[in-house]
Length: 583
DNA sequence: GTAGGGTTAG
Image (cartoon, rainbow, N blue to C red; front, side):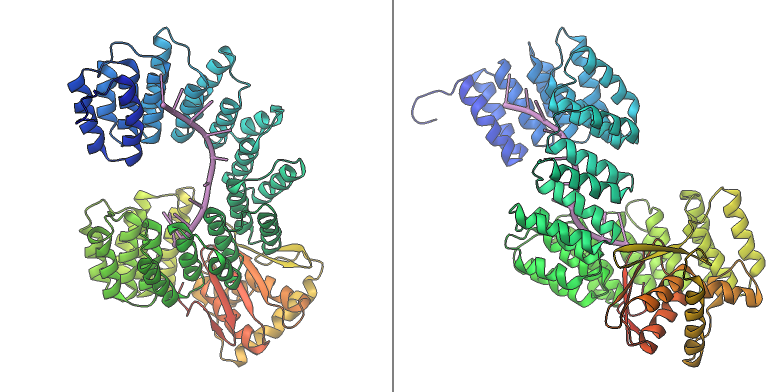
């Protein structure tokens, strides 16, 4: 255009600016901005609004605000662009501020303003301002508009008022797929995974076709329930709706199968997926990580890089922790350094925690501590938690105590830290100190979450707590455990009594023997036919003693036993565990 | 020219 003697006008600039925004490179936009000034269109309402939008999309809200401030006149779209800009740049309180600004002018907010500001409120996470916006929306008569009511509902769920969210859901007559997705997600956020699945099937029955977001959400719920049957049913629906190759859906499928204990199915989905992106690769990498296949994690990561796909920060969490699992200290450091040097990422607390864990596991406790203390960002609970875990594994009580003190300050309500330190004391026979830690825990009002395990037999779920005697086949279960005890002791089993710290003497040994996962195991041995794997799920980490017993049971009964605890899988066969005794 | 729901981790 420059050579043709034809000059761009305001329409040209309004049309070209969105393209600059799409490149998300602020430099192009700034060049265009200079050109606009040269031609004298910077004060034009439409051009300036497009400039605001462009700067917002390029992530520079201060430049966007400069343009906005210089505008001689602004319409509702200009204001909305500021709200959306702050929202997309995660500066939520300013988005709310600009919403209030609209009402200070003689303008009336529209559904764009409402749905955007409600999303900002949802992200702030406190219902106060969201509730006020609710009132304003009612006054402006926009409450029945789909975007507004959906955003409002989502705001209530994200701000912890799920009863308000559910109430709103029930009043919505014309529920679209987004309405349903928010409801399913609302259940997931409240850990009501079964209810999440139920809502999904109701939606399906009511004839609302699920989209990829519906599937990834409900698969997340099924994964959390470790419900393979449910997950497989959902997979059938995915195929029915033709979303079997959608990368977002395949990522969730891979994660679901992995979390339900079926690495083979996860792998099959991954192999069959054609357009893989960083998320689906990471899902597969993480699946291997959860199943203790650290070498495969590193192989997959290298394959991914060869295919020219850039990792994200979650990929690196998996890779670094795989290096830690296999004692690859040098490789771990090389990958860690590659984050800044090759992948242009700055490591987050998670990555530093992985490195502390890596050094700690390798027995380099001093180096691990130095690493934590010389981090460029302030070490958080995750980092100190990794170091405490290492102190426990290597029996460094002195450092453990020091680190635990820090953790008690940073996160006084996490029971895990107290239990870890207390167990370190009792392992050394320092029962008085162990009890003191327990007392401190009680003093701070912290309670250990009661452990429970569950097992599915013939489509029914049976839940066990420690010492549970509520099951109708309790007598047989305890008989089976007695039999197992004899066989285990014959194999050289010695109870690892430091895992049951509150008790003393023989009683202590007994308490250990009736942990929930052992009860579930006994029930599985009784009810499931040979050749069928015994799948047990636990809400906490499994204890070392149970881990030992599971290994022995897999050998003496010739059974495959799969225990899914809070953060990983243990697959026991022939006296060995897939985790390589590392978890 | 502006808008709602999520995917991979520990």
